[in-house]
Image (cartoon, rainbow, N blue to C red; front, top):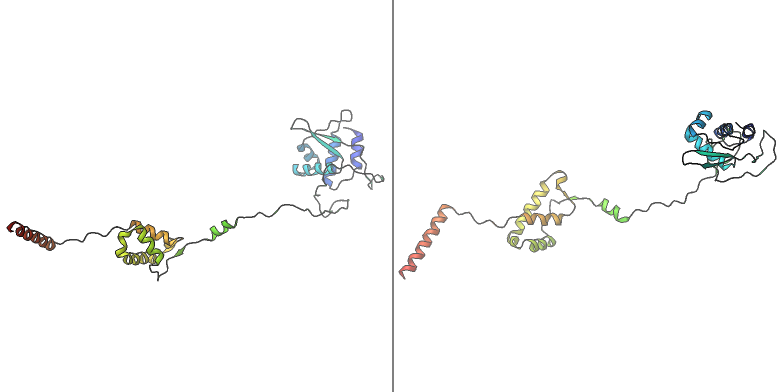
Amino acid sequence: MSFEAAAWAIKRRTRTPTAKLVLIALADCHNGDTGQCDPGNTYLADVAQCTKRSVINAIEELEALGYICTEKSNGRKTNYDLLLHVKQCNEFTGEKNAPVKTKHKPVKSEHPTGENDNTSFSIQPVRTSSKPVETPSGSNEAKSKRGTRLPGDWTLTEEFHTEAQRIRPDLINRIHEIADEFRDYWVALSGQRGVKVDWLATWRNWLRRERSSAPKFKTAADQRSERAAATYDYERATNF
């Protein structure tokens, strides 16, 4: 322990009590001959009776006041250089005003209102240069596009008729019948299954699944009539 460093730390004025305790703890670990001072944050937090986050904030404050300099020796340990030549006017020593060396911008105090702190200071509003994030207009339009139900009075329009003629020309002779079946099916369907975003595309799929006109079913009487007609034609052809 360096008595010179301890006496110097006690007379220094800080913005927060935590920074003062951390500075005294650093002075207690300071080697007056070698200048080595490398206590860990756990030790400093235990001495100052605070959290490690508070220790880090206190170190930043002491750097801003120009009382210490930090230097990482091997990536793990940090050596603190106490600037014992720095003086600052305070009510304990009666020293005159002297410039304070600062390397960083002043950090925000743990007590913004000055509560439990014998130092009067003000906190300037923080200005940020961040710009609002611009979202593409197309994404909102895509989200706002919702499905609809087929109106109960829907009829075959020119656009739907043109698509039917292009995709299934073999169904044109009964396209209105198919359109009525299409309307009745989707109007009667309940829930989300009856909601579609593109009804024209639904109509095209409906046409693709539609079967061609089925051959007329022949009864036994029709078959006998056809055989009789064929026999009669054959007899006429052979007797000629």
